[in-house]
Image (tube, rainbow, N blue to C red):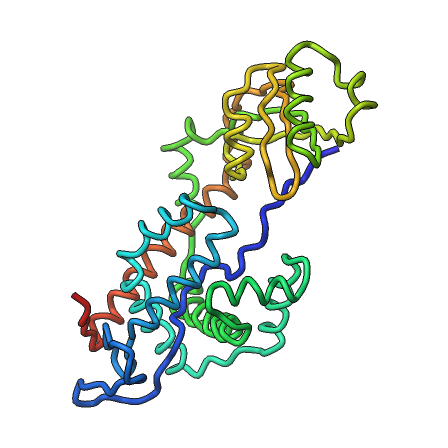
Length: 316
């Protein structure tokens, strides 16, 4: 039986849009204040970006990252991203303007469905609303962001993604150049023991290291045992990766808290990497080449939008 340790759904996946949009045109290049007390930090064609927009964008980013980072680590991550946030806001505004120019409409059913998916990750609607409130947000803010996100995905699909092709000979050429690096990855066979209580988990880990058998301990501890395999190329949760990365065969990890339980891992065996055939690797190569072309195409398209737009940054 394989265990499934699932990370919480990110509240807003790939947050790309800014928070407030203004629809007033500024043909002379001069903008009026959206709010008398709010400082304008950038003008993007007919729209302005305010200090409040930047703060709101930071709050949305923080809300997203709280699913993966906590405490000091979260704040360090936020600080490392601050420099790039205004650039992201400007690019997002350009993409959204292009979507509106092309009259992209969003099915409201999709927005409600996405909101419901987000809510399912919380114990109750009250907890969901409390989390939003802690970031100075409302459900209406989230709905607006998701609507804009769908619009932006739509225009990117039309202008960039839908025009990308990866030819079979490109896949073959890549395989011939990189075949030594294309392998199954190291696979680790693990035993995962989960408990509700940290002290019990720590005591159990100690007894296992002392040589006691798990089957003899099972009657004394309220535990659940699962066997599963992870690949070195899989994206693992940080807590799990740290717990198993240095284990030798039959070694037992310290307890690791993952979501609401404490896990102890024991390494049962390791399968060494095997080189992939072209048939086995072609899906991976196609995805890699497509992503590479997607990034290059998106960069070119954004550069073209910037070239043909009026952008003025007023922030020091």
